Length: 282
DNA sequence: CCGGACGCCTGTCGGC
DNA sequence: TGCCGACAGGCGTCCG
Image 1 (tube, rainbow, N blue to C red):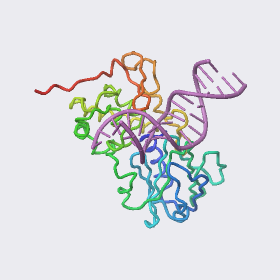
Image 2 (image 1 turned 45 degrees about the horizontal axis):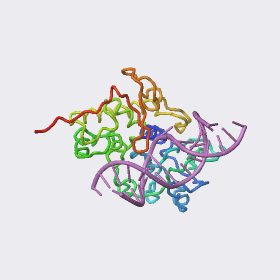
Image 3 (image 1 turned 120 degrees about the vertical axis):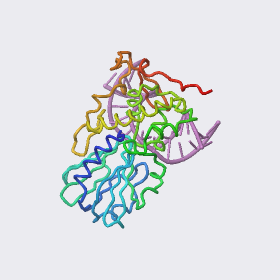
Image 4 (image 1 turned 180 degrees about the vertical axis):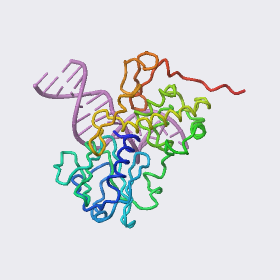
């Protein structure tokens, strides 16, 4: 479900609503997520204070005080969501974990497909196996046209698949890869190494723009994404290609096409997004 | 090393 | 109405 803008929306809420609160208890109803929730996690975390909440890619990091309590590491997978609720709110079928706070509220993890993750790690979290190989943050300095040019040369991999590879750049999932390529007018199946050097900067700018616009709208709610207060995100209204197969391109009116690339639905406008070739070198 | 396919798990939807 | 396959916002692992 959540890509970078949705996780960022959740993160911003938690950073204001939960930072500084003490965790009174952790209730695990179902530990079998992508990796099992460690059995010792509830006792290890109970009594600790949430210092703040950070995001790295699609992971949420909750550093605790005292530091010896560690850092909560949370990932929402495809179907995960967090809700901030009053203690006593009845739990539903897929409400797997409650983080009970000291102010009469709780943060509840719901995840029907259980592709999510709740682990405990420690400083330096950058060395954690799940975080160690992550690429740059797309909204920070390291993600530039020069960087994209460097990592794409010589690769035959489709540019869309490269954008969705977290080792290259984090946070870009299927929705925003499709949208960014439309904005940059690049065909999703174009081999990454054949993208003209001068267009790499435009693609980086498109990724940044699409992600920032979505964050400003509170993310994309397709079916069920909500922020921890239950608020939907409205970037779905701005989607240009994702989920719009057969509908007219917002730029030229041509019918949007859908295909499968790497097992994922891939949308593009056949008129606005054409393969382009690098200038030949001789 | 690279790139693609697969599997994890549940819910929903469309076609027959 | 009911059944069945396809598909869904992610990602680690395996294989050629």
